[in-house]
Each structure stands twice: as structure tokens, then as C-alpha cells.
Amino acid sequence: MNDLQEQVKVEHVPAEKNEQGVENIETWPPDEVFQHLAGLYIKYIDIYRKLEETYDQCVHPQKRIFIKKTLECTICRICEMKKDLVLFNPRPASIYVHLDQLLFDLKYDPSMIEIPVPRYFKEDDQIPVDIEFKEKVEREGGGKKKKGKKKGGKKKKKKDDDEKEVKIPPMPLAEKAQLMDNLLIKYQGYTDPEVEVILDPFTLDIQIKEAIRLIQKNDRGRQGIWRVSMMLKSI
Figure (cartoon, one colour):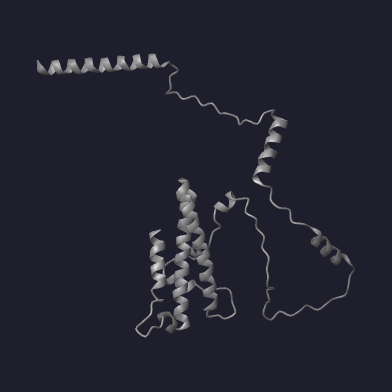
């Protein structure tokens, strides 16, 4: 969290206005803006990795709620920084950003900019994932392919079959639990989980009264040994 606070301060430094009331970052050349945004992008990825590890290892339920909100905000900020990097990219009309030189200057490993998938995605299996591209992706220099000879209506049939296929939604957690209970009843005859019995060699199967007597006996023996040692010292 301290790294995140320092990162926010560093990010807002160039946005401060000078004496003429003009933001400093507006006077920068595009190369310097790109270097500044690239440094912020790498730092945000480092912070995201630490937050993701903290959320995965944290056990406190209240803390996990706030850590998850901070983690999601950091992910959104990384996406915004990537959009700005593409906007000020020295190679125009390219979504791929060259950060090798900056990583070499900062002495970072190239794997630093690899963004891992959050591990809590596996836990929240009820999140619906429906991705729809509203705009068509156009490639440069790519024209329409020439139409060849028609070989039949096989391709059309395949397309029609693909369109008819309906996406099967993921099974809810309640239905999964009901299915597991039905299978356990069918093959084992009960739904209660099996209890593993572990014998602890340091436990004694005795009643409370016997335990109290054993403790008293040991304490009296300890007191007797202490009294004898004091008598021997006084002689």
C-alpha cells in the first residue's frame, strides 16, 4: 500500500500547473511523455503483483474485501496506462509497445511486464464471461481475399451449424453441490464427509479428576525436590 501511495504521488507530479497556469506535462515532447508513462506502467505492474500475492495469502475476511477493491482498481489503471502508451507510441498505429530499453535502464527482467492472471478468478466461478467486440478489427495492408471456385455447400453448412450452437452457461455452485450429493448417495449411501481419525501419541484418554490428581502429584514432587535442595544448601 505504501508503494501504491508513492506511485500516485509520482503520477500527479507532472500534472501540477506552473506559474503560467499550464500543466507541465503538456509542454513535454512526445518521447518524454512516453518514457514517463512507460515507467508508471512498469511500476503499476510491480504493485499489481504484490497486491495479488497479498490477496491470495491473506486470511482476514475484512482485509480481503478492501485488498480486492484496491487490486481491481490497480488492474483498471494498468489498462488505462496501456491505452495512453499506445496513444504516445513512437511507432504509430501499433498496439505493441517497445519497453526493452527502459527495462534495461531500470535493471528489470523482461518477465517483469508479464501480467499474470489473478488467482481469485478461479475461486469466483460464478462470474459470467461474455466478450463481444462492438467494432471490427481492421488490419493494415490486408485486402479481401480472392474468391475461389465453389467446392460445394459444406462451408455454408458448417457456418450455419456454428450459428445454431448456443453457449452453455456455467453450472451454478448450488447445482454442483446437489450433483455431488446425488453421486455420493448413489455410490456410498451417505452425504457426510469422511472423518479422518488421527491418533496423537501425546494425548491421554483419562478423566478430568485423574488428570488433576496427576498434576498435583507432579507438583508435590517438584516442591519436595526444591525443599531438599534448599536444605542441602543451608547445611
